[in-house]
Every structure is written in structure tokens, then in C-alpha cells.
Length: 488
Image (cartoon, rainbow, N blue to C red; front, side, top):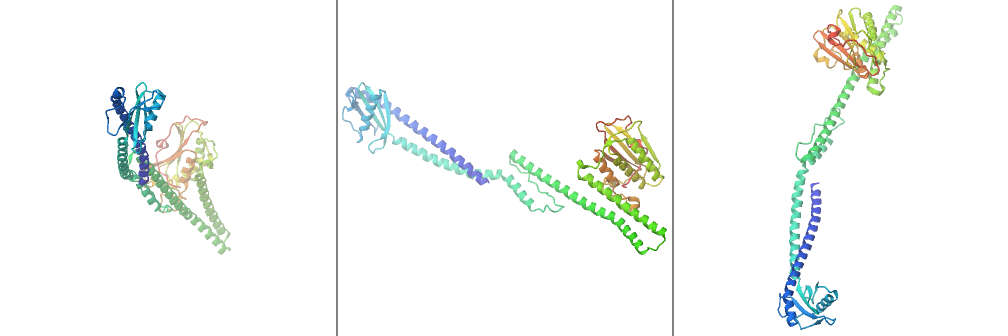
């Protein structure tokens, strides 16, 4: 590329040199011709005195010049006295005749004379009816112009050669960053980007080249960083999908094995007592129900992940205070060993939301507090408004969540319980479903945990048209003593 640019620059320079040389040569030729004409005028001033006094030129001016005096009073030019003229002397008489007809003071002409070369002729009227014609050779002008052209050709050729050679080196040095970027691009093609763990650590080197090259290098590196970040996101998504499929298979395998085992019991123990068959049938139904709940949660998460425009929500004005009381009543009935305390404002809080899904969120948070805390642990629920947000907080007084697990409690199939027991760990989807549902509502769910206390705080935007509330703001300190929760 540098060679092509240098050759193109050389071609452009050649055109410029040709124009400059032509103009300079034309100017020099015109200057020398004007100088010769001035010398001829000066010489003819002296020659005119001889022509007037003696009727002919008696003194030579310059070597190689010709002079002749013509009488034009009779109409036809007539040489007054013989003079040393070249063989082709008719041009002298012709120029004198043209001067007589033109009635000008002087007249110039340039033409070859009898094989002696090109001459510059000047005719002037020295007195009425008498014309002096002088011819001066232009060989010096031609030789000077020829030498000038030769010097120009040599000088311009050397300048053109230097321009191409040094210009090529300069351009190649200036285009070095482009070569580096091209090398980086070729190196990228050697990477297998189909590999889930593929990354692009290559970047264009920090070399010079001016502000334009720096801007191009920055854009190139920014593009590579974007591709690298996209590959990392894709790899993380694929890893998360693999982990999700593995966890889902792990969760479904146990209930399926249980269903198969109880089915075998019915096959080989058909003659058992009715009460034993009823017990097996109830366990079979329980495992099927557990598997159905798990599939429902997975389907809900898939629908929430599919598209925000197709979120499975039926928004309506929802009284969060009433919804919290309903969830609290259900919790007291199903978990009598965990005392529950409600904290709500004097008025209703009614954002636009899906009441069935919000109830599911509250049930998951309360069940999470009950499952992962010892009997007798206090649980509290509060509803309030702060700024333009509705707040729901669920807290318990359990042992707390280890700091290493707090960042992953909302991950799917994640349990703080490393043993992954289902009697105390659920399927690991409760908090993940709650987080996805709240984000589908445009809100957030936050975890605040420490030794002896944890609070899950749900924030929902109060959309335009919802009823305001006069209830006080709520935070972790407003729901009673903090406790802990685990993924349900």
C-alpha cells in the first residue's frame, strides 16, 4: 500500500513538475526575446543616423546581425544600397512592405533565413519613405532554453526519484499501525470462536501515526473489546444454561425415581392392604405434585426470560396491604411455629401490579424464612411507601446468610445448604422466581443480611395513576429485629 501511494504521489508530482517546467520555460523564452528586442531597438537608434545621413548602414552592430535600408516611397520596397544579406533576403523587403501598409512605428517578426537558423527581425521607419530592417539570430535564446529544459528535466527527475523513495519509506512508517491492525485481524482469524471459552485478548499496539491513526486504533480496539465482552457473555450464558439443565435434571430425577418406585410397588404388591395402597398412592401424588410445581416454576422463568413485551403479568391496581395480610394469614396457618408480626401504614398502597404474582413472591419469601430458620424464629412483614416506590419487606431472626452465599441466593437451583436436601432446601427456585417476577414489574428485590439478621426488601414503582399512601417509609429497621432467609 505504501508503494502504491508513493507511486501515486510521484505521478501527481510529475504533473506538477511538468506544469512548472513548461511555465518556467515559456517565461524564460519570452524574457530572452524581449531582451533581444530591446537590444535591437538600441542598435537601430545608432543605425538610423547612418541611414539618414548616408542612405545606408555603414557600421556593424553585433556579429551575425544583418541590416538593410529600403525606400518605400514608390510603393514597392527598394534596397537603397547593396548590403551583405543572406540568400533568402526577401523577408527583409516583405517586412518593410508590411510596415508601410500597417503605418506602425515598428514591426517584429521571427523566421528562418536561408538555412542560417532562426532570426528575429525588426523594421522601423527612420524617416518618411525610408525603412530600416535589422535581423538578429536567436540561436543564443534557443541554446539557453535548451539548457534550461535539460537542467529542469535532470533536477525534476532527481526530485521525483527522491520523493518516491523517501516518500515510500515515510508512508510505510506512517502506515505501520495499519499493518499492525491487519496483523491483529489475521491473528484473530486463527482463533476458534466457536469454542464456548473463546476470548479475544489481542489488541492493536499503542504506536504512533497521528491523531487520525490513533482514532482508528481506538475504534479498532473498542470493537475488539466489545467482541471479547460479547464472547464472555455468551460463554457465561452457555455455562449458565448447562448448569441450569444439569440442575433441572437433578431436581426432576428424584421425583421421577420415586414415581417409578411407587408404581413398581403397585405392580408387585397388588394384594396389599387397602390402607397401604392408599399410603403409596398419596406418596405417588405428592411426588407428582412436587414435579408439577417444579415444572411450573421452570415454565414461568422461561416465559419471563423470553421477552419483556410478553411477560405473563395481568396488571391491575393492587392493594399491597391487603395482599400482605392474606399472605400472613396463610403463613400463620401453615407455619404455627414461627410467630409473624405485621407492620403497615394507615392507608392502602395500590401500585399497578399482578396480585397473583405478587402473592407468589410474598409466599416464597415467607416460606424461605420458615424453611431455613429454627422453630420459634420470629418473622415480620411490612408495607410502606418512600418517594415514588412501594416497599414490602420480609425479615426473620434466624442465624443469617454467610457472606459468600449472599451474591448467589437469587441464582436458579442455588442452595446455601450444600447437601441439597429437599426436606429443607426446596428446589432452589423460590428466590429466583421472586426476583424474576419483581423485575418483570419494573422493581427490585434486595437482600440485607448480617450476623443474626436478614431482610428481603421489595421495591415496586408507583406508576402514574396509582393511589398515593400516607404510610411511613420502611427499611430494615422498621420490620423488627433482622433475621435470615434461605432459598426456598
